Image (cartoon, rainbow, N blue to C red; front, side, top):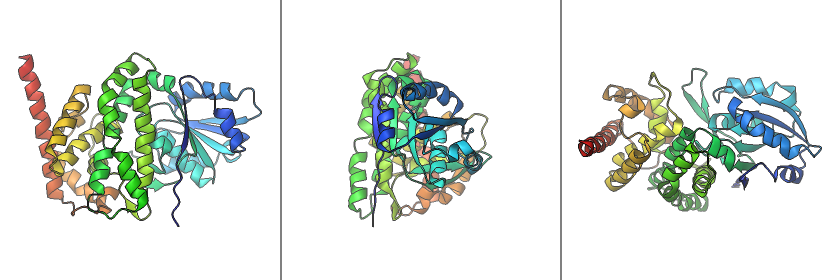
Length: 369
């Protein structure tokens, strides 16, 4: 039997006007808030305002930690306030949301998600990215998606712009990764629907992305913010759920192989998930010899300041052997149904993407000169 469950969602410009009704629809009388420190500061007062005239009880409010780790999940599981809640409100960005989803699954509860930034599509996906306590990548945890997502665009618009910027970088991976992962696959109706939907993901980023970043910088809740936010949170998230099933994994490919492998290389600076994935998109296009796409996305990345060279993500050619050594351990590599991926081509693709980015930077310097 195949069952596909997708998150419902509500969008508003201010507050959470539908929250009480949705809680009533599920017969939830006790809720608990789990999220990042800044996320709770942004969203918790609005959640409390939405529920203040109801008899729905908020049993507690907890900071999840700093990473989605199983140790954080275990710590939260032991809180009586969380155990007594009917539903877990998971609040914040990808790491806090992923933690809340695993927590809900392990306690046999549902989750409502409240994204406060748009750095990825975690708020509607049935997968969590789990890290070790030393912040290296551990594994993917397959869990139920939140049953409902609440998007408040004024919170998104008032969040630091780099999260929206990184979310665009991550979101840009969905269309080419699904296309590459399914290229040689025999698709069932679920995966076919995911592939079809994935083809709608790229265009809104190219059309609205630059304006959305500018509007976020100015804390303005605009159509561009909403279009980009819903593309990141809903479109790419729904694709993830449709292309990630027990029988197959078409949800991501070489862009995320690059990201996951790169976490094994210590660097002096921390990089956002989507920041690294955005260079991985260039690696994918280089690997697939899709040079028109490489040109298009590299130029777009450059226009909004996303990485276009290895140096931009703190890497050098000396690190590529390490990345190639780690890459075959990733889910994307192990479950690929394309022509067999090879370490040699992966290294060459990283070099090709880097060389193209250097060329674009050199052209810019010539224009300035």
